[in-house]
Length: 361
Image (cartoon, rainbow, N blue to C red; front, top):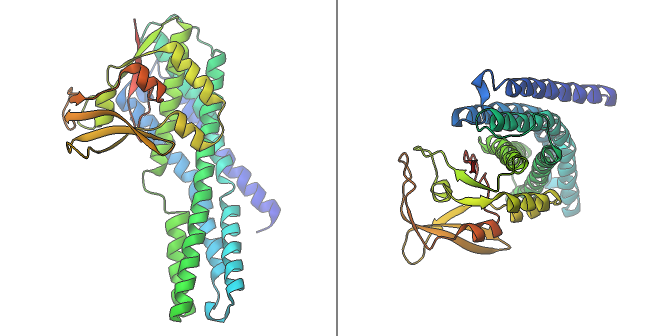
């Protein structure tokens, strides 16, 4: 394909992403009139996440397929006739070809997330004014503008980082396959089939829920940060965590349901996070809560991992998972100040987290 054609095709794809994002923005801004995608309801939140995830998946699909094709084309050789140095070079060239094919993905993702972030913040402010009765302006404030920029930048960085890990993972798998093939004397067709499967599994084989998790984290963070901004503008000093207590709710969100935190502390934490660029640093500042088994009691243990150290948040002595309106019972539970210090003061707390916040007045 010629360079001009490739550029035009890329611009076309970005244009389609922009069109989707504009449509999503329009839908979200109509929320006060038609509750089709109301971020203030669990169903509306789920629909917004699913819609965004579908578009992100579509935007990444073609470049991922191109990456598989480009990498496999480089590696389609008779490996039995190659030297160790040639094998290393070919795998390196395949990795570069895959990286080049996927390099367009972050720009396409950003083209969608930019307008979507504005829509999420606008919908959140609208809900705060109309449904919660907060005395805030209709226009974005300075913090809102930073929220839009932060959630887009952070999510694009996460996607970019993941793309790099996938290319590296493919390289490691390709080297293993080639080494085994040369040692066992496999023919060209057998090796090519194995490399094809490896490329599809690593370069384009994300779990079915990958983009749902990305979209959920994006919408969840945008909504939460915009809520905190609205609370501060309305001079509300505290907010509480509000989980969706249905059969799908995790033990994590059941434990955090009802916890109360300081708006000022949350703003300070957002300010610190907004200064971070590396995905690993952001994960440390806002870690997701994990679950393991307590070695002594055998009960579920909720914890966060930071710097290679696990810090327990609570032991679940009676689980409410699978029930409605039941948070369960907990022992050795940390209080709000300690949770805030650990970065567990606002959702999302895990992948596909639906938990939100409400003003404490």
